[in-house]
Structures are given as structure tokens and as C-alpha cells.
Amino acid sequence: MLQQVKIACALHLWARALAGLGLVSLAMMLLAVSGGFPSQAWILLAKSLPLMGRLLGAHGLSALASFVGVSLLSLTWGMAWAMLLWAGIGLVRTGKQAKSAPAKTKWQRNSADNILDQGFDEPQASLAYAALARTPTPAPAQRLKASQSSKTEQVAAISPETRAGLITPAMPTGEYERGEMPGQRLCEPINAGVGIGWDAGITRKHKPNEDAVLAMRSVCDARGRLCPIALYVVADGMGGHASGRVASHLATHTMMQSVLPAVQQGEELNDTFLMDTLTDCAHLANSVIHEYKEARGVDLGTTLTAALLVESTAYIVNVGDSRTYIYRQDGGLKQITRDHSLVARLVSAGAIAAEDVYTHPDRNKIYRGMGEKDNVQVDWFVEPVQAGDYVLLCSDGLWEMVRDHEIEKILKRCLPDVSQASEALIKAALHRGGSDNVSVIVAAV
Image (tube, rainbow, N blue to C red):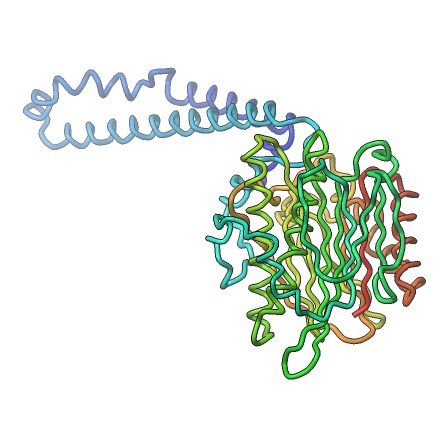
């Protein structure tokens, strides 16, 4: 109950006003019960202390018992006033934080600590290296050393343009495609098994698209034979003055330059190694974004969801509210990732219904993102997949506009044509209002 009140006060002015009215009412009640301020018990205790010797001589231990009773009553009133004062200070601080927070920002800086301190358990990679976030970023040539001898089938990435000279990525063998205009709409297959949709949306069609997507397919010689591997990433940037697209650009390019080379260097492609690799690379991406932010003094960040497919297993990570799903013809659509958003916490706490996530005024506020701190908690998942399954990655620009059951219907109607499926999902999001950038990857297993 207390946890729900804290969340409500952090989000709503009416909750803070109601809490303040409650504190004033409790203070008035305490004044009436205790006989004013200072309380009668405090006054009596102050008067009896100098006369304690005489009272003991005249009345014996009965005077001591009365003195202890007055002392306990005084202590009770003191604790009650202290609790009221503590609650009042907390309410004032909450109000100041709410006023100082940017009205239109998607990233609430102080929310992460507030919510994580309430005892929520977060899945995290058991062997993830927290120190990696503080490790200097290796040079692109070093990260891609292993890729020089790899058997790369195809590499494709779509990400917003950033300032000239920001990044000059070293590219492995293959094709590299990029959206040239910030508002360009893209719905085309990367190859027969991957379809990508990328659109600035309707509301933001004249602004830079802050989403970035990455699709890579390769082959490495492991387990005594050629092993196909694939990496898919969606990042939803946050920050004004085009800083969001810089953050998402940094995230996708860091993943591009680190994940597959690290996998190709591995001697044994087991679950522990692959999951640790993907998680560590997500930490590296966070470190790159954080270093950029600190060096330039800008406020930026991004969400991230990534899926690494190796044979019959999908290794998935996420930070923020971009999602990864798995679609199976006989099993339907299954959301794998969890949203790191305030409304998701309100749902888990029972404060709002699951359907309210789509209409709640604070639905775009997330409490965890890439680049805010030098280290970040990364959720990870290991999911078995099979031939005929499809992996769907998307930004909140899709799932906030199109409900999960509608996404499932579109996939059922369009697949196995992944290009048609990605285009239909983009059109559905735009038809529902297109209030945000929309990014979709539909990939066949």
C-alpha cells in the first residue's frame, strides 16, 4: 500500500495534494489528542523532573511508576510528530522533483533509484561483468578482428544520420544500408528471411527519426561445422535536439561491431558463453553512450532490445520499453521482454489494469535506459526456437499503437512474407495515430 502511494505521489499532482491534506488532518488530530503543542505530557515531564527527588521521598516507587508513564507518553507524542515531519519533508521533496523534471521528456532520471529501492527483483546475467561499463571502448579494428576471416552472408543496418565525423565504423564484409533522410519511411526485406519497417510516424514526420535498427546474418565455423548466427537490434533514442538518434546510433553500431566478432572468437558456443557475450556487449554499448554524454555534457539515452539467434536458441536482452516477441503458428504471439516503465510497475503493483498501459498519461516514462549511468541492469532471456518461428523486435511506437492481439492477427495473415508483415505493422501503427517513431524487425528463424 505504501509503495503504491509513493508511486502515485511521484506521478500525480492530485495525489500529492491529497497526501498533504491527509498530513494536515493528522496534525490537527494529534494536536487535539495530545493537548496542543507542546503536548501536556511534555509540560508535565518538564515540571516533574526538578521535583523527582521530593516525589520519590514522599511517595516512593509509585512516583517512579508515574514518571515512567509520563516519559513513555512524551516519547510517543515525540515519535508521532517526528513521523509527520518526515512524511511532510518527503512530500515536499517529491513535489520539487516533479516540478524540476522536464515536462516532455521520456526519461525520468530519479525514477530508477526510487523504484529499484522498493525491493523489486530484476533478472540479470549471473556472469555479467559490471566492470565492463568502465572499460575504455576498444578500437573498431580490434573489435572486428575476428570478422576478417568470417564467412559473412549479409549485414544490414538502418539508423539515423548523425553529425559528420561522429562515427566512422569499420564494417565487416557484406552490405550496409542506411536511411539517408531522418523522416524516410522504409519497409523492405533485408533478405528472404528478414523484413524491416522504419518510419518517423505521423506526429513526428518532420523531426529526426530517433529509432535505429540493426539486422546481421553471418556464419561461423563452430561445433565442427558451419553454424548460422543472426543478430537483430532495435533502439529507441531519447533526448532533445537530435540527441536521441545519436544515442540509438551509438547503441546499434556498438552491438554491430562487438557481438558477432566476439561470438566468432568463441571456442564453444554454449548457452552461458552466448548469453554472457550478448549481455556484456549491451554493457559496452551503455558505456559508449555514457562516455559520449559525459564528454559533451548532453542529455541523451536510448532503449535497447536485441536478439541473438544461434541454431535453435534465441538469446535476448533488453533495457527500456522496446520489446522482443516470438511468434509461432500454433502458439501465437509471446512477449519475451519486460518493459522498464512506470506504468508497467503500476500494473505489477496492482495500481492500474493492464489495458491502462496504452492510455495512461505517463505511459512513456521509463525508469531504466542506456547511457544514464556508467552501468546498467540488463534483463536477459534464453528461449528455444524452431523452424517456422518468427522473432519480432519493435519500439514502443508499434506496440503502443497496435495491441498484441492485433499484431498477432497481422502476422498470421501476412507470414511467411516477412516484408509484407513488417509493412503491414507499420501501416497499422500509422493508421492508429502514429504518435511516435515506429521500428519493426520480423525475422524468420
